[in-house]
Length: 80
Image (cartoon, rainbow, N blue to C red):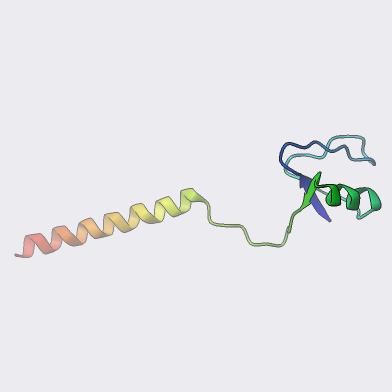
């Protein structure tokens, strides 16, 4: 299962002896990790969920739409 620390928490991996990275890691399901889940120390992450669109790509799409609208309004204004 893929887990990452809950906000404001640090959890030590009992196998590796290091802290669980903030971005999370794949761990073997065990009583230890199930207890961390139950206590709210970690959360599970669905690694198969599709990634959401980034704000930068949405902003670029808006800029293109604005440019197209301004070009269309200029063409309409010159025709009259």
